[in-house]
Amino acid sequence: MANNFEYYSPTRVVFGKETEQQAGKLLREYGGSRVLIVYGGKSAIRSGLLEKIKTILLQEKLHIAELGGVVPNPHLEKVYEGIQIGKREQIDFLLAIGGGSAIDTAKAIAYGLAEPEKDVWELYEHTRTAKKCLPVASILTISAAGSETSKGSVITNEKTHAKRAYDDNLARPKFAIMNPELTKTLSDYQTESGCVDIMMHTMERYFTNGGNMEITDTLAEGLLRTVMKNAQILHTEPENYEARAEIMWAGSLAHNDLTGCGNDGGDFMSHKLEHELGGMFDVTHGAGLAAVWPSWARYVYRECLPRFVRFAKNVMGVSDKGSEEEIAVQGIEAMKNFYHSIGMPVNFQELGVHPDNQQIREMAERCCVASGGHTGSAKKLTLEDMIAIYSMAAQAV
Image (cartoon, rainbow, N blue to C red):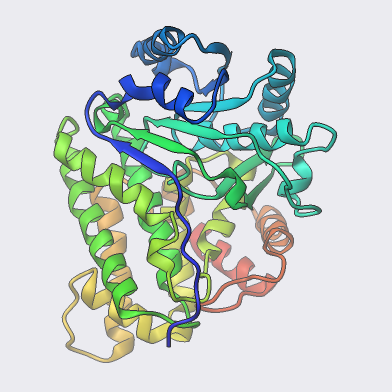
């Protein structure tokens, strides 16, 4: 049965080759005059993209300030640094150049500048909600997070190792410039980690016990098959523009809520479990998801059997021979084989982390706190469930 839903995706997408040339005019169109450019560093500088964008913005007589050095699993201290720059430079628009880390950092800074008298971390701790947010836009160089069209952002407090998400439509970007050619500088590991993240954003919405729609399922299954196909192409043909275009657009569609319309809000426990893993061990997010998901799936599939059976048949191509439980397990194993085919891990050992029992309990306890009242849809997880899933992943079960 379909749940009521509201679909809201206001971000303007400008897609294709050389679209970054439009950045200055678009910023002007959306009211920007004093722009803080947020980026990671080495790739944006080495490729010449940063200087190119600065030149384009200066041609439109825009005032520019910069914040570089954003890292994967972006840090709260960098957000605070950006807020201070923004105050000093009287910034009125944030432009992220990069992937989810740069965009999420820009969103957090935008919240902080819009309400400068308050601590932005309170949003991520969920002790208050945002009332305002400065406008944000992006030039995407990594296909993964979907943050270029989503309402979400994730920030890590490096002092406490707490990795927390905050969702609010106020932060949906005004526009996203998406040129697939800009992703060609990525390593294979970054590319394939991104593909895992894209798929997981839809899989989190797919494995639910709270209502589904045939049209939404069909869109989700098609997206997943498309990403799998093109992820394997890019593993051997990294310069393939068409494959990069498919992956880039899939990344936006996977996390702008389209593939969750009519469900109960999704499961998202694989993400929450990985957030604590990433907060403690600073692993690449997509690779961390690949290491968590098989153990989560094996732990919960009996509680959500019809969805796992459908997934096995319609996404993984498993035949309908055997019992429903056998088909579901074959689907999980097929996904593990796919992860291996693109060089991704399927457990913590392959990821290169080795949490002990105390660290596993700490991650589970943190996950319980971060999850609040929402601990899954496929199966509502308790603290002991989370410990069991982490332990399975650690033991390569």
